[in-house]
Amino acid sequence: MQYSHYALTKILATLKACENDTQAAQRLIAKQILEDADLLQGVAAPHLKSIISHAVLHAQRLEQKEHDAKPTTQHAKVEEDMSGLGILQGAADNADQIFGRLSQQPVKPLKASQDHVNAIYQIAKKIDPEDKS
Image (cartoon, rainbow, N blue to C red):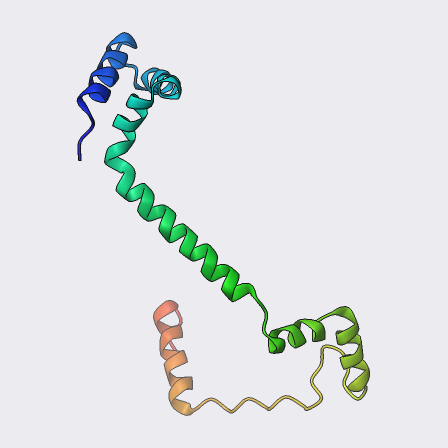
């Protein structure tokens, strides 16, 4: 779809009147569109398909977001447990634990294999060639 002949004529005349200053022409055309429905229709017509497509997709996303935002009973319970009172009660129930620490001792890391140690030494030698050991 193309711009209507009327809209194209008005746009070219506005550009000529503004001495090809596109910013000034855009401002003037925006003012003219407010008073001239035919100009608005002529300018907007080529873009209506994408405007309508955007509006439909936007509405669909909003509906999906609202659907996803409705908490189920399980989500409501989790939100209730994460309130300040829920956190305090959880801390009181686990009195044997110190806040921020695990109740079990962390597992000791495994020893690196000899292959890993050799690879580290090779990398170190490549980085620092002055060290000739």
